[in-house]
Length: 414
Ligand code: IN0
Image (cartoon, rainbow, N blue to C red):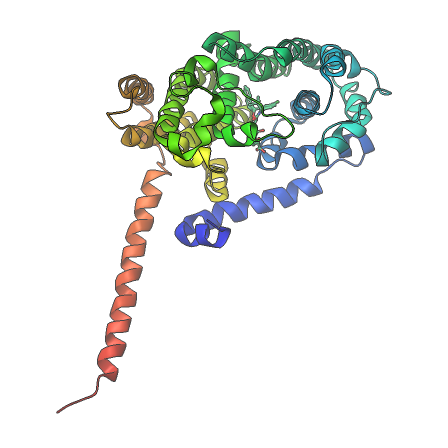
């Protein structure tokens, strides 16, 4: 749907969209004047759009550390993703990356578009990194080292079992959770979260990305990238790419639902992690991507479009989530609503229906047991039904006008 169509269908998106636009404009004006920090913050806005705005509202010292952590990870990711780099060149770079962040003279050209600029001008990132406090530097170095080694391990190994899938997601996203928890702790604004909960925060986001990006990854040129574990897809097809062919649509959707059921395992850990956060800006920073993830899973469930094109949350809904996520009541509300939406899509003929429903019910129970559900602004379901009534009223008004016009112009035969 085009953006005008989306706005006509969801007029209550307009206000949060305008607010987001104004926040983006305000953030642009706040870009630091020093060349290296200026580069880092403008790069952050180029590579992450709405997420950059959420980073922007963190406490300044923590914000600088998260901005650098984000860019270092994006750079590492650019090396891992660039399929044109030979393996024997790529692996040593991934393994040594944690040392390059201390070296203002290091650079390696790869990637495309804004990622190429990030790589070519990486000296700005290392200059900024060297200005961070030592505890922030240590956390970023430690995670970069472990992630680089993990990525190198998976360059040659395919994701076969569900354990491999969890291990790969731990390297590329779970470790991000561990690193962020360390940064929050270093800022003295939060206690140190348990590693297993921090890991789940990353796994829930990354598994959602892997599910949503099936087509983009399989169609990657020169070589497709495959992250769906064989242990799951082999129950439905004999080759992962077969899921995209029309004749396998039923199997493809069953496999997709299986993958979503697997991702839902992490939702409750995520709720526990978020409920322990104390600082409101850190809470929002963590909660917004999580709500987007469960919303994306709800959109993807039983949706063949995942194998045909892009299934993405509309910009207006993203803006609404950013605008309305302030407290744990909002998070429980959103997780409850999206679980309801998922539940309504589960077909009892799906091979994993019972398992999926059990997980959704457990998530809903956690939300209900929090005692915060009735205090929520249920923005997803209620606003849409309110809108439907508005459409109905508008429809009857138009009908009345047309009727009045026709009656007034009817030829009088008396
Ligand atoms: C992230 C995560 C992220 C944010 C907050 C808390 C987290 C806790 C554990 C793990 C990750 C956490 O969030 C971003 C969100 C993001 O980048 N969104 C993009 C949209 C998109 O589709 O790319 C945007 O433009 O808004 C995220 O996805 N990842 C990430 C990377 C670094 C950091 Cl510091 C935080 C990537 C990933 C792979 C899921 C960890």
